[in-house]
Length: 388
Image (cartoon, rainbow, N blue to C red):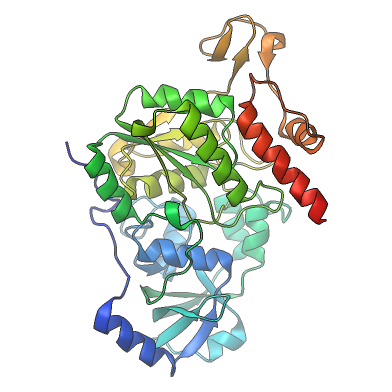
């Protein structure tokens, strides 16, 4: 069996090489420039390497409005999150549709050329309502949206320099991961999205999914997250420790996804599923409150949203899991679907409680997390406290 097809049927590649790259780099010296922020850098990389297939650039107005209001591109293809590039009025006035623009990273390097096709205005509050289901600025995704500038640029991009080499051992492009899966003989691959260390509940659902497929892709976000989320480098150490000790190494693959979190809940669940399809995954895990934050979304809204589309429109098989826990009476991991016992028998800790224990150097119960993972997190909290 072959790997699943990319979204839209073709894996996009907008990376310049050889003479084309040299020519674009030379021309960049004479172009108007725009400096990207962290999220825009991440989006640029994922457009260029095909993770955002079928996108070839930042959305033009027709696609933007269709994605915002209908969760589809103007072509009708499912796409749930606007991928945009904003500029100020002053920047806008220096640009001309039909001309190229040099896109610089925060370090000053030219990363890509934008082939500018459109400049348009947009309604931030309307986008917040539609995508995030709230206009409250305390929502991190809404805050990032409101911080954007007032005009959007649409057009294809061509990458001329790598955006970043952070987490190099795990920074696979979709084409690279697909080749790796083929080399391993995997055609049925389940992907697990996370921005947190993997605790016992996550371990349970990933292993349950692994029973039905050839391999497991642990694919954590290593791009921009909330300031109180555990840093990616710490999480990578925790993933390495867990996978090397508690998972079959010949059936698991760790790779970092250099995307920025939107915290868009249901919309982001679709977004994450489509991205993993582009990386070659045939299956995707959606648990409770996927990509959620605070109390903005219902516990299983991220699962329910997929019912709005025909399965073939999404094109990746979905594993929906309920909240899982360790049941002391059952003597193992379970969910409300499989455990008949009262919640008083369940080992369940809030994120706040876990952070308190880690800060105090206390290892949470083994039923909640593996001790090796807890120790990595405790050490990280100590290092942070000492540096403060």
